[in-house]
Image (tube, rainbow, N blue to C red; front, side):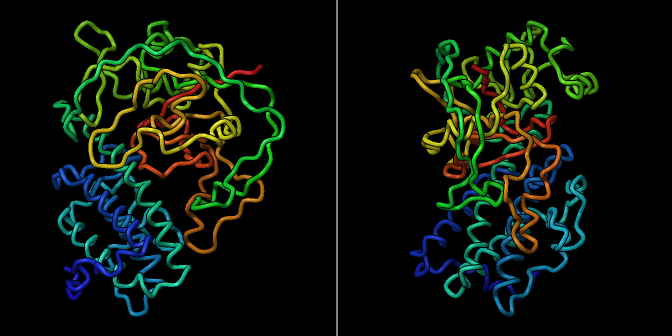
Length: 431
């Protein structure tokens, strides 16, 4: 398959390694392969639900992105690796034509995992050869492609977690790290936020996705944020107090979801022989639950119900972003290598903690365009804008988010029932 492309799979030219963009591209592409290194063809081909994609599809789709928007559109004479694969690995770009329906991606037993790896190698070699001659528009697309691939690294991990959680053998994707005892965190403290006119949105310095801007003014009423996310132990108290059985705590759609799906606890919680919620399933397999760690894998509906039970509410996007704007987003436990990922227990200290890199934090804000938002021209303009309907904003990044990928203005978004990501909650209240 893909004859005539062997030369593109040659090693990268070391003379181009001084290009910062080339170095970033190589690092991102290598990290994706490291995350999937231990997977069998069967592991990489299965799809456990319509919202998730097979690991093999993530490996191929991220290569299709570079091949289509950089190599095809900016390298004269480039020949697609296999023209048939565009139908298989286009995600949602209507401008790129017909594609495999998302819920059917698990039917792609062919191409094999090894063939997809060869495809990646060929695309990498072609990018490396083309990089010195690319114009600024193409280089900007490579930068976007790196950010896009980092998003898929996170999705690869969370989709793999959901897949392995369906297996009664509770297999681990990565070897477990040594367990360290965690002290119970101090009771929640409240940190007063800024009020009045505040600016949010990306300020134009460095990379940002289109939906993060433009920067604009919002008005905030007096409020406070909890100093840390809610823990497993605090959530277990909600469960034991009948939180999932009390209709008055839930939005109508949330209560209907709880009833229809039989929801009684966060995703991946497991009961012990006595019926207690003491275990959880993670990328490192089945283990005892760390009660001091942030609760994760909860839906917007669950986060909203917990907040009501606790006598609080969810923060707005503007409240969260204005509070996080002066904090260092690299200080979280964000992913920087292949291996098990898990949120860290709360550390002692004053002020806002764990705003970045432990769990995505639900906000009460709908995912809508910032004032003045304009999508990019062409197919890449479909990247974010067309999803601004029926979803809610999450902030902060999780333990599965690549290091350096998040910032205060970053806007993640999911539908209110979805919880297979590392999603948690930080409370807010009016003052």
